Structure formats: C-alpha cells, structure tokens
Image (cartoon, rainbow, N blue to C red; front, side):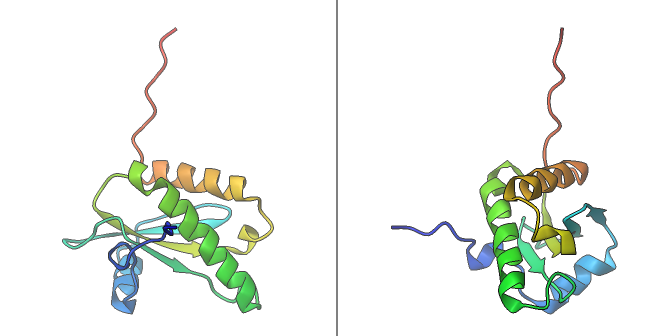
Length: 124
C-alpha cells in the first residue's frame, strides 16, 4: 500500500521561504483561502499551508483544514504549470464548506494566478 503524500521536495517548510512569498505581494484571494505565489530560482511548485487560530481555536480543526488543502493540491499538482511556490492560507469559512466547494475554489484561484492553462474556446 503506497501513500499519496507530498514528498519533502514538494513542501515548503522554511520560515524564510514563507516570508519571501509574503514579501513578493503576489496573491489571489478567495472565500476559503488566500494563495500567495513565490517566484525564485529554486521555486518548483512546492506547497506551504498556514492555518491560524482564526480558522479555529481547536488544533484538530486546524489540522483538518491543512490536510484538506494539501490533498487538493496533491490531486491537482500534475495539472499546474509554472515555476512558482504556493503558500495557501486557510480562511475561517473553509471548515464548514464542502470539499467540492473548496476544490472548485482552488482550481478557480489557480487559473486566476496563471497556474492552470486557460480552457480552449468552443466553436459553435
């Protein structure tokens, strides 16, 4: 049985990289999350997730929010393009939302950020 997890090379863990992402001031905002984009010579579609106590006072809930966001990113990582790192900040509305709503918003924000190719126009 293999686990579908993000490897260490696919995760952002250093605080300095998070600070760099915030300093670059390149973000897209949604109802359930804010995605900060970090450009750099070492950027390679890695993910960092932040859940503050505004999401929930309970650590169990914050961990659930992080797991949800990592899973959505992992599932769609192959579709994403570009040499950017992502820092996703969970918002308070994430926990009561359905996983399908959160996933749809992630894809919408990724497209807005230029991480997903635009859909081809249909000819009538």
